[in-house]
Amino acid sequence: MMRAFVTALFLLLLGASANAERLIVSVSNHRVTVTPNYSGEELVLFGSVEKDAATPTDRTAYDLVVTVMGPRADMVTRRRERKFGIWINTDYRQFLQVPSYLALFANRPFEAITSPEIARRQQIGLNNVLLTQRVSGDYADVVPNDAFRSAFTRLRTQRGLYREDASAVTFLTPTLFRTGIPLPAEVPIGTYEVEIKLFANGAFIGKTETAFEIVKVGFEQFVATTARQNGLVYGLVTAAMALMTGWMASIVFRKD
Image 1 (cartoon, helix red, strand yellow):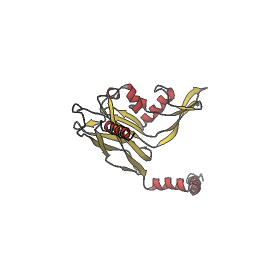
Image 2 (cartoon, helix red, strand yellow):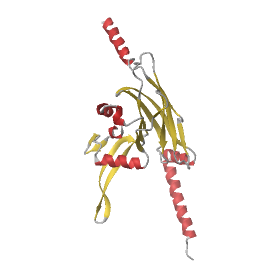
Image 3 (tube, helix red, strand yellow):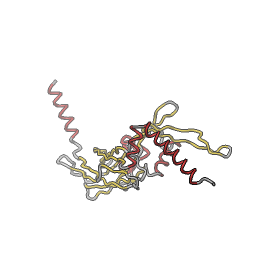
Image 4 (cartoon, one colour):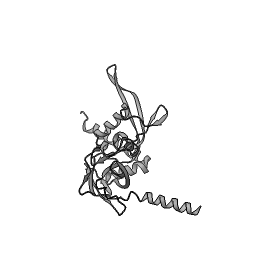
């Protein structure tokens, strides 16, 4: 029994070491600060594919897919129709705990990197990323051409919050690579997860992860913290400021 266990453990370790490559990655800034005049910026992800003696000698070319996901939140997409001359909401779909920011980058077209089955399993490409919805009391993802999903991704893309670029990853050498991570002006605050997946000859070799954080500083951070930790005080101060603004406006624009 012990001999069989040792043999199984040895085979497991041998299989784990068969894919000998490992990824070493980092980002140019692990903490992005958002100030009142923040207008967006671009981080740089860089890294290398490290080989060892177990790496097959015929493996000389690699493919990379980088997925960046921002803080998750529930979101709603509504369908509007024109009836009797006015636009009204006629239906809606709730998306559950989906990324507030989503970017997928690669060194060549996603469909050329691996098979459709592996692409779906590894969520390669925007159409393969799971976006769970509440559908008639059930929870599921749907086909990419679903009207609500298409509208959701289109609206997020227009705001620069969802994107995919099949030529964003550049191999500087056969094993050294880099890519930019653009962050728009309205980038959500929170922790961002970065997942880097390595492929060779269509096969999934392995992955690694890193992260960075986006935080507010200055007056915006003070207001956000006060609203979260002292909601009553924040509400009273906001109401007082609104009353004072209205009173001052009535004096300035008063007709004699």
